[in-house]
Image (cartoon, rainbow, N blue to C red; front, side, top):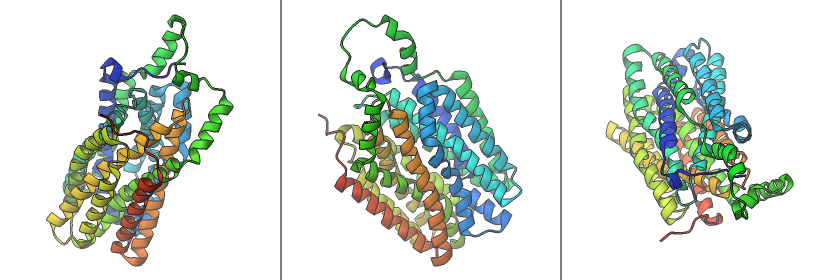
Length: 420
């Protein structure tokens, strides 16, 4: 069964571009509430950092439950309907959050929104894998990160401005409106990914020939696929790249989107300052993400890891000691470059090691790692901040992030050798 006709071979990147727009609209909405949600939750419901961590972290908890089912459904029914389903669930949750009247109402609908967001993100990753080859995978998959960042660069600026002028609830309504636009675009304009089109058309017309090695692997009996998957989950790449992915998201959701805004407020920074800080985190991340894709394809998947660790830890330290706006913004720049280098690496690693015919399940498991990072990061760092103070929460974050990156470098075999 033929699963892949890539954009690299056809030169047609229209579907990749369209998915980038959809992802950017969704991330624009999420970026709009980024600097606002912790402040809104604390102000509206008079809760502490732990509860704020719950409100932020439950969005990502859905990744623990939806990644694998989303991959299986996308393999059975096609990519487009499952992407649209995820976008619709995400929109429903976001709309209900904007109408929140109680802390547990907000957190419950944040969880629902996260369920949909993870379905959306997982299947987009699978769609882009369909459009790539091993030689272009780093760059094609990095377009997903780039679309997310393009929205998150402007989103915090808009959210901070709207909150300062119109109140903390207005950005929540704005998020729902942007997600509506994304859903409409998916339903109206997004084609099914090429592998299903080819699967429907080609078998009857394909000339008789010996199957390729990849096709032979894809046609293996289910029990052999299960054996390959068991070997995968016991491999060092699965374990250590998974831990690195957990820490990438734990830093983003637990530190940057939860603890750091509260710490920034305690330092005297307002919503507009935190909006600029988040925006300047994402702006350099946009360019370093594109660089990471190139480095991954050209020099190997591991090449961006150590620079990512150094820059992330430097950014966290700068934030801890920041007592002026320029230091705050510098910390955002450092963390943005660091995350941009490191974040695509995990996705590309898992796309490389996915057993043929089980790509959806493998990438779904990868998204579950990210969900674990969201939940543990938001809850753990919020709890540490409540009991030991904000600086301790961020130092623990830096130490764990560095340990995860070093683990990848020491114990994981490279999946793509330096080219040229």
